[in-house]
Image (cartoon, rainbow, N blue to C red; front, top):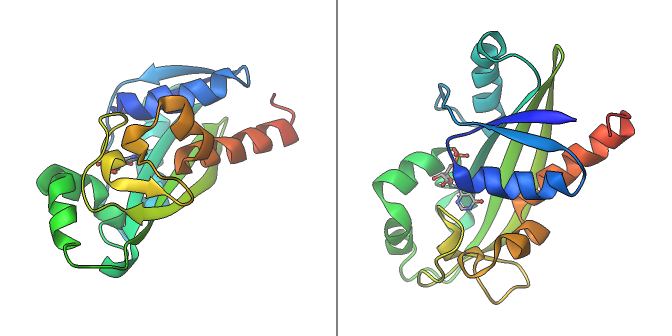
Length: 186
Ligand code: IMP
């Protein structure tokens, strides 16, 4: 089975293709963007994007919208994660969290898969906490300031395979694979 992954983020593509290759699903990288609306839920961003992509892209495709939800900040940056990463970066988040002892946060990924005429949505979460400083150079985005629950290292200090064993995105891939095998696509 072949699926096109529409993303401009090479890190996301590397993570998802590594997981899917193990299940014999071939992922093709379609390196292009799509309009992203500002709304209160990741899922709505994908559903809006899909209405445009359905006309423009032939065949099955996958899109990913993810966000970092920090509890002490009321879920911020959440759906604004891309904008905040661009404008404030990890240093800006650490500044907002300065002096805060309650550092719990969750990464969320939502996937939308277009198969035939259907849109299917899959979710993955990873609970953890925001570190006091940036640690590690691996991964991308917020990886150096996010330490998954039960771990002593940030995603930024983990290999792709280590992140893929526990991450929000990897969990969304697992749900997607379970669904594909239940519907006999695999
Ligand atoms: P989007 O899903 O591309 O809109 O991502 C929102 C923001 O969160 C971007 O700044 C991404 O770099 C960041 N982001 C998404 N997924 C991850 C991840 O797995 N680790 C770290 N940052 C991420």
